[in-house]
Amino acid sequence: MKLFWSDEEGQGLVEYALIIAVIAIAVIVAMAFLRDQISNIFSNIGNNLT
Image 1 (cartoon, rainbow, N blue to C red):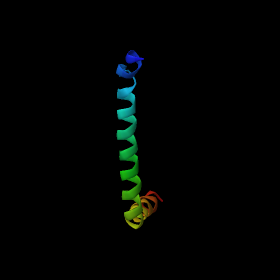
Image 2 (cartoon, rainbow, N blue to C red; image 1 turned 180 degrees about the horizontal axis):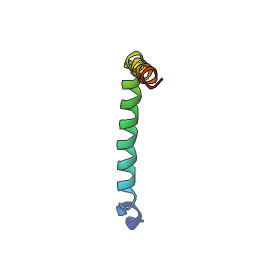
Image 3 (cartoon, helix red, strand yellow; image 1 turned 135 degrees about the vertical axis):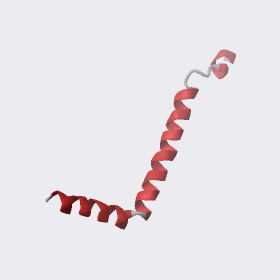
Image 4 (spheres, rainbow, N blue to C red; image 1 turned 120 degrees about the vertical axis):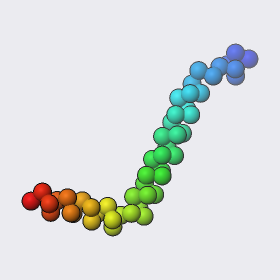
């Protein structure tokens, strides 16, 4: 039982998953606040391509 609790093999994977989750939440929040500006940028790109 002691070996089970001291095993830290999967700890790195969990830490990376938490970091990715925090970054994803930050990107979603930023996109929600900058929605209009992002839409304008893509519209300008589309207009310039035609």
